[in-house]
Length: 455
Image (cartoon, rainbow, N blue to C red):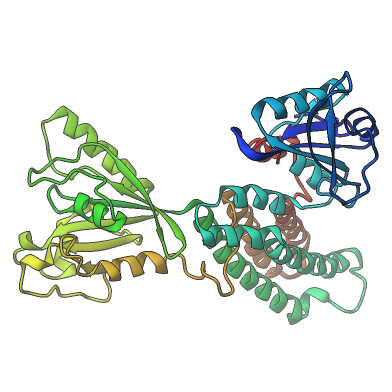
């Protein structure tokens, strides 16, 4: 990772290929040489100027719009010049090489946003939201990323940091001034405030889990015995004939994935080989892959053929029939082919959710889609969640653990006060890792390397 952030960087910031408009962006401390050599004028700040873009000999490479954004009031916090030319790859490459010849270097992926972070224009969570907005696969994911970019997630994190700081002041005062008559730690208020802080962490952690779901989508694995109608269910939910459907058991031997949008929630459906004992080496490999997908799934739709259930007409008896279903909280039992039977399944409240459907007729599919949509909770338009990343969840979980440790230490009264203060400090560091207040070059390099060049 470069440590020099004082040089000028440049990149083509529009997608590769031909188009109506292409943009070359330069960012640095002083762009006067670009004004003089390329534009032949000094553009007024934040005003579009139509002019020629000149080569080294003074001839025009193209003509278009020049936009100058002086720092620190720009995206990166530095001076920015954008050259909006015709979207010809040849023209844009000439402009790029001209800027490099004048002393700029090609920007690394995400380096413009990295400089925005380093110049305090964005915190790290907001910078990540820029990439998430670009990568959004649904309208709701885009709205969630915009909420994060506007700082809705960061504000909640900063509020927790403030509360942690206040609690640390109380505890460290008790440590530093033990001769004072007032025992801060004996005061029930600090214990109540710590309990309230833990509740706030619980709420933020739940919302952040939903933010990850909104960003990454939900991985639903469709599994079950051969010929239960798993591929038919995939096709019905996807609305396309994605998987081959036959009456021959074991038709699906490899993993088939299809991305769909359910109420704004990005979902990846995974069709798998039917689980059974088989001597066929190819089918056995498919079954092994199916079990691996089940283990990694966010949700498992276990599909059973209603016409083959016989006396197993209750969820309780059905669960006992399949070892794979034991103890799985992320399970939905999908009883398929209900158009072939004239009885109803007995559904007990203490067992996993069960949804009767017919992939052929469409009966029950609306209920199944509603089940999928409900997994996203408040990902819709209301007070919707913001996009988040798994590293945010990990940091919050570690901070959460530190808070519980601090609570346990405070229960020991003064004897645990120093350890409690250290636990709160560690929780604060974990929150700082989310916003970038506490970070490392390795983490920054990993985050910004995932951006596109030009952002």
